[in-house]
Image (cartoon, helix red, strand yellow):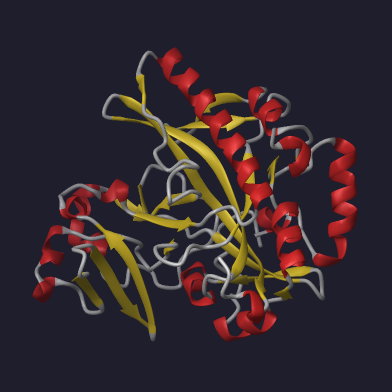
Length: 351
């Protein structure tokens, strides 16, 4: 993977991804998830210390897109949080070609673009169904999504709980520390603070997203260009006066534990892997002003697919990415010893 868009990198076919995925015992699954959960930066890798101590030393700055990000006190590097999760059974992904994007005309089935339908479940929940290239993507939507000028709410996202008790306890401490930091920022800015509603008590925790569209003046997020560039002509539908362009997709890597390397796959194919997989999700906390309040959530940076549970357990509940800490089955023990010695293991840092 490169430090740029990575459009030139080839992606691995989904059939080959399935063949490549390591089959993990429960102990291997838990160990990988815990080893894949830490705070760091792209440049320096994992940071030592408890999450509370690391985040308390961070400062908040305004980025080029006007949002507030968290940066290290030494070197001014953007904080990245890596968390091992298992995708939830339903609603884990918004990873279709244009995510949850809908416009008012989609309420009329005759005006939906070819391949897109809006369904209503027996419970009354609206679902966007998109078909393309023999693939199907489904995501939840709501009535207010059809209102005009909702482009900023269109997102690609991943949702799933931290996959072990240790990682969940750790992630809860991280969430509360970030909430406190941004609450202080709101006070300093003289505006009201809006707490993140997708916290540890919410069924959507952990939830991370990035925008499908950004304004033409906004820098693109890191990642790769989609292999399905605007197949439903959403930019034409909203009109040139809206001044938007497609963002990049989050980079996704599949870990080859035998070769101790990673290969790229498509973000659009993640839902085809099922729910019994371990994902290492890289996110960064960011806050933004909306309707006179400071809100925050996790911006999705990239994803690593670590492996899948063996069948008997399945019924139970860019260079930029390559630079980030690699976790392989063969080095779990040595990693655990290093973490214990530095005081940064989940057992010692979740308190």
